[in-house]
Length: 193
Image (cartoon, rainbow, N blue to C red; front, side):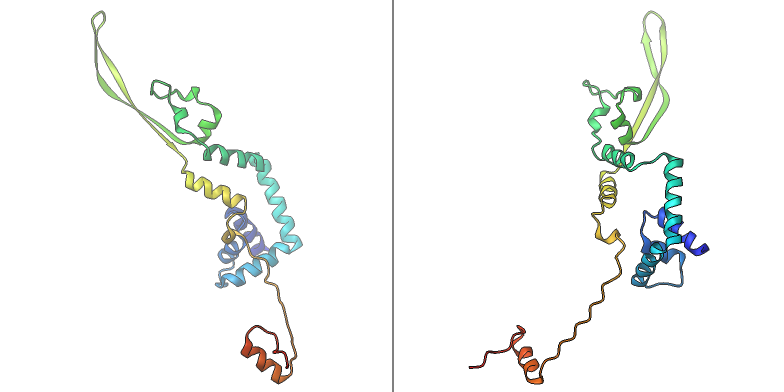
């Protein structure tokens, strides 16, 4: 069961890709098709699925995550509009003046204070003026779009394939008719005149 627990932890960590988790944990398996089938079998095991559900509940409770929160955050980042960072005069707004959607859309804010110049004030004399460099970085929209599509299941390659169906077909044809069907390629025998 130790390997199965390790599989579940990897499955959660990689975004629920059973094939990848199986390949990482069960290193003796190198065939991706085999890994997908075995991962599917493991996930159907009642003990493994119960442990997976328990771990996911623990993580949701610990980090107070819900599907709504994740989708809201993806949406806020996807629809982030950098114009909301600026005042009508073109100057940058204070971070405290930004709305929640704009703040969530930011990936980083960096403010560097440097020695500036002197301001000549006739009443008080020369004064030191600090200069600030403000750098704002927002999330990569392509990456956010891909995350949203993956979350919505729009990437077929990220889905674990189900076990392939097995179909056995047996058709008994007289030897002459089988040969005629092969020649015609449409599968129907020629009508006799």
